[in-house]
Length: 506
Image (cartoon, rainbow, N blue to C red; front, side, top):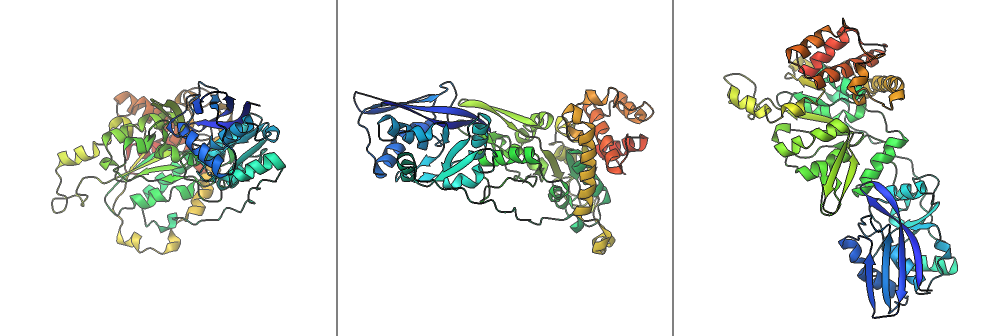
């Protein structure tokens, strides 16, 4: 037999596509030709596979070898095709009977000694195979626990090309994935550690309950960073759908922790202010990889010292904040990554960051305006909650620990509010108030009475609030209502939402 075929999976972003790896061996000068839009790593597979086959004690066919990856129009990236190529090549040469691999997806990178090494993105690959109706997959031993997360798929692992050959030729059993271990409970920062800042705590609770973006402005030591770092402790654990999305993104980025478990805690990303645009939104040669905004999907993206970030990096966040996804186009192909994250900005009032007043702050009014002006109006217009924090007083700093609510207490209210919102918007396919489109809020049955929105309408007509800001205030009013356990917002809810939006004293 001079022809053989083995199934594999190719990734474009976090979307997997079933790929057929064909091998045809013909008479002629010995050569290896790979077709099907391979990238550089896949072109180099011919040398890796040859060394792995020979060093595993198998005979390399001295014939003209054509390897084709179908569908040919789909770009192929990475080294996950190595093991499938080796199996197809040995099957085409007559060395292996490939009947045991019929309908089986084979994934893995080969070392020169035949070792099967783990690859990135196995979880979305196996998920795509399951969606295509594949029931059996073979993966590297280092990816076995990760692949076993996908239900309905029988996962087996290999550590060496020897083992795959023995399985196909003699029926030697493959390695079963390790048993799932309970997810360890890792303690994090608690809201009880934040002294004072009742306004900031209330703003954080509203942001957590509704999924709203938040900006914290104030002097050093006021608690901006402490509040931001405790936002994940107020968020509920991810459900199965969200956990698969988040875990798949981290799998593609190669950032999954050992053990291969689903990530249940909302992710927290806090890039340094020297971060580049590609590191924030995604980039890289060939197919763009996910950036911090996608790795924070269903979690929190915290930009501390926000005015110190480059203008290009900040402005690049506007589109994903609005649409919940980021579309990246490169010469090697385009891809879309989910980016439904909560953005938290923290900023000092001026470059010197000293208390205001002639005897302290060294910055003029113009310098202060220019510093905060680095946060553009269009970006801030997408930030629902904008609060100004005052310095902490001695009485608040020295207050007993029992005088402040811990994260667990606030998280219980947040969970109840989120459940109320999810029930209300189930017909729209939305889970959070921040995800609801403005037109739905302005039409019956969700349109609020004119007497409730009178102040808000006045601000819109005067130009102090944009149409986008109008919708975001309405969303926050619904969140405040959910936190209080009521059915519809009233005038006080809208007024509080306006104060949270504009940073006015509460």
